[in-house]
Image (cartoon, rainbow, N blue to C red):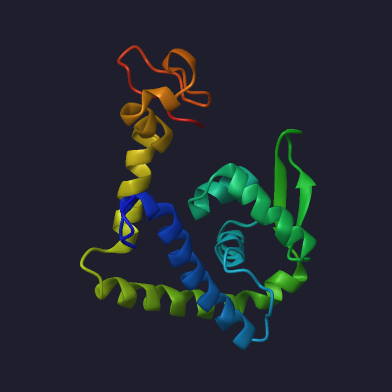
Length: 182
């Protein structure tokens, strides 16, 4: 195995490190603002709630560009931290998320921080050869088209499940394309 830090085999490790650097410094900004323990992933949810009003977890997932599972986990943590409440929706399968008074009181500072972070991110991207946000969008689209698991199986079929079946794969359409998950 190559030992160079830029080896594509280390991509996941390097991406986690990048996220740790980005999130860690934004978390430090929150601490500087007197909000120790406030998680950077909370702000997009609270900004979306401010814009949309009370919303379902699915709506918030779509508004913040994350999976339903990721949004559900974030919102559960936010509820535990006293930033949102959850109530049953019209359908028992849906829960409606509402910001608490504490969260509403934080909105002016969160909007200011969010705007400053967005500007800082644009300036950071200007230093790169290629905008990271665009590259992330392209990477996500490529993985939606063909998962990393499928790509590993392409180069090492012996690592795949029986008869090429990959548990968790999306079913193929008649054209062979993978269907999109809801």
